[in-house]
Amino acid sequence: MNGTSDPVARLRVVAAGLRAPLYAERRIGLPFEQVWAVVADLEGELPHLLSFVREFRVPAGDSAHKSARAVDAIGFRGTFDVRLAPGWCLMQSRLVTMGMAAVPDGDSTRLAVCGAMRPAALGPVQRLYRRLLGERRARAFFREVERRAALRQ
Image (cartoon, rainbow, N blue to C red):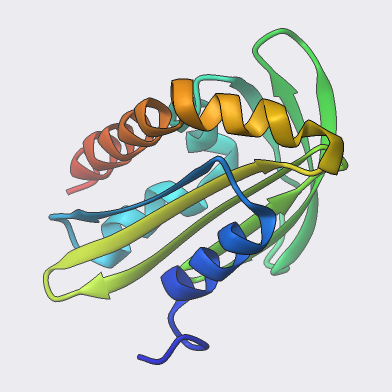
């Protein structure tokens, strides 16, 4: 696949453009369909995958472009513009951009996650986040995706 048709490569470019404090890729030893079923179930799974998300409400329907409502762990509410297609999910609020992408890799799946604050003034906060929490949050995300996808066998 070239960079334009590979959702993981596309998310890597988005993360670089955002100077995202959270960007990571991992190979998960489960089929793409099984992994993506967890990742794409935003309403049912996102609160399990991200410790700071308490609730994520997505309207029903087959549209690849939706508006969702999120509630974080301390009760802050936000509206997200969601773009969702097989292997690609990009969610943006006025403060946060979050992305997930996946591609089949033989019998496994290559999965990527990205997260960034949108206001440029928060650059110093993002650098501190990257240093203190970024890798730990990414490892927890991948562990939970793999655990929850394995339950779908």
